[in-house]
Image 1 (cartoon, helix red, strand yellow):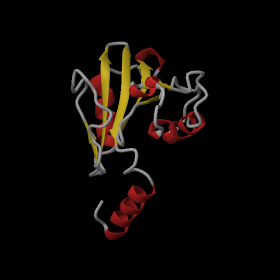
Image 2 (cartoon, helix red, strand yellow; image 1 turned 90 degrees about the vertical axis):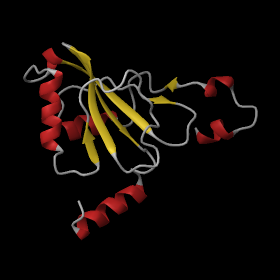
Image 3 (cartoon, helix red, strand yellow; image 1 turned 135 degrees about the vertical axis):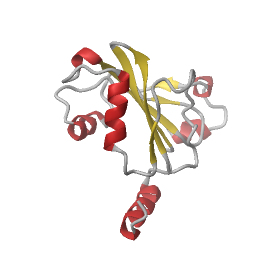
Image 4 (cartoon, one colour; image 1 turned 135 degrees about the horizontal axis):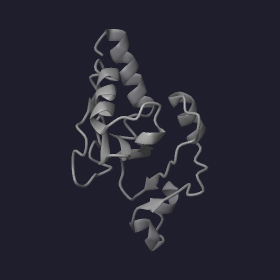
Length: 150
């Protein structure tokens, strides 16, 4: 995919965001199901665009499908309690911005988690730098743990 973006005379479609794995067969769906303990595969629609780093992932949620129907404020409180001792993870209030930029946290080791929507229909988001969370980022996080920094 990277070669397509770097090619001279590339397809003009590469100049705009593109949805992929539209058949709901993305390689990370089994991982999401396992790690999150889901009984059903989520709707997962990744989008790729022409910028170097940064990422935003989203998962739609229906309050009626949760084990205990919850409001956005209640779910935000669950996230805050779960990640309270994680200095690199910030939990934002619901609907933090009217527009979301995937590269907002480019060149950062931080992650922001938040919900958007209202009432029954919500979307859970995580924003982070997809390159910083790779092998190098993991090595730094492991070093922080060994040194007692985080």
